[in-house]
Amino acid sequence: MSEDEIYMQRCLQLAANGIQGARPNPMVGAVIVANNRTIGEGYHVRCGQGHAEVNAFASVKPEDEALLKDATIYVSLEPCSHYGKTPPCADLIIKKGVKRVVVGCIDPFAEVQGRGVEKIRQTGIEVTVGVLEKECQWLNRRFFTYHSKHRPYIILKWAQTANGFIDNQGKALQISNEQTQMLSHQLRAEEDAILVGHTTESREHPQLTVRHWVGPNPKRVVLTHQRPLQQLIDDLYQQGIQSLIVEGGRQTHESFIEAGLWDEIRVETGAMTVSEGTLAPQLPTNVSLLSSEVYGDNNIKRYIKALE
Image: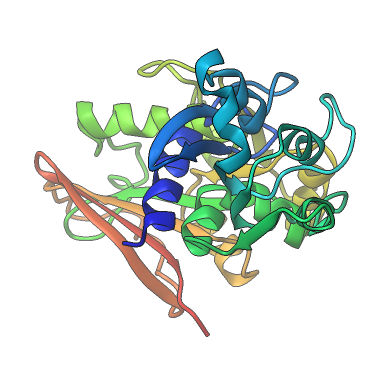
C-alpha cells in the first residue's frame, strides 16, 4: 500500500462509524496529515451536523494549527461545494489553506459531481482523486445506487435448509441460529426498508423489527398483487429510501430477480433438512461470490452482480 492508500484506508474505517447516524447522507471519513503525522481525524456522525472535514479540522490541537499550510487532508468522498444543512466543506478546506487534498471518489449527488474538487483546484491547492476509489464507492453503495440508478440498493435475503427448502411443507421454519439472527437484525438496523410478499405477510405476520440489535426499525413494506414491482420501487425512491431488504418467499424473490432489481443476495444455509417444502429461489446466472462465512452449523454466502 502507498502512503496515500494507508491514510485513505483510515478514512474508510472512520467513515463506517456513521452507518446509522449519517443517513441519508453518505458515510465520510477525513484524516489530516502533516510531517508524516496525523494531526486531525473526523467522520460524519449525524445528518444535519458537521461533515467529516469539519470534525477533522476541529480535532486539530491549537499547537498544530500552524502545520496546516503544509498538511494533506484525505477525504473518502469529494468535499461538498453547496450549501445544504451545513456550509460547503470545499470552502472550509480552502480557508484552512492546506497544501494538498486527496479524495477517494467523486460524489454522484447532482449538486456536487466534481464541483468540490474543481473549486479547490482553482485556488491552486493540489488535488488527487481516485485513491482506493472502488473501496470508497462500495462503502456508500446505497447512496451511489440511489443517486445513479434512481432506486434503492436492493438486498435479496433468504435462509434455506441443507437440501434447498425455505419452509417445511408450507409451514414457517426456523433456520437461523442465535448468531445469524443477530446479524440479520444488525442488517435491518443498517438499511432503510424491508419488504415481504403478501403471502408471507398473511401467513406468518413477521415483525420485521430490530429486536436483537441496537438501531432503528426499517420501514415495513408489503408487495401485493395490486402494487406492480416497478411502481413500488419508484415509490420508495420518491420517499428517499436508499436501501431495501427483501425477505419474502420464493415468488417474491424471483420477481425481483426476473426484473433485474437486485444488487446483493445473501443466502443462509442451515444444517437441517426437510422431506419437502418450498424450494429456495434459484440464484441468477450473473452472480459473483463476495464472501462466505460460517456461524456454527450455518453458512452465509453473499453475492453481487458479476462484471459484464
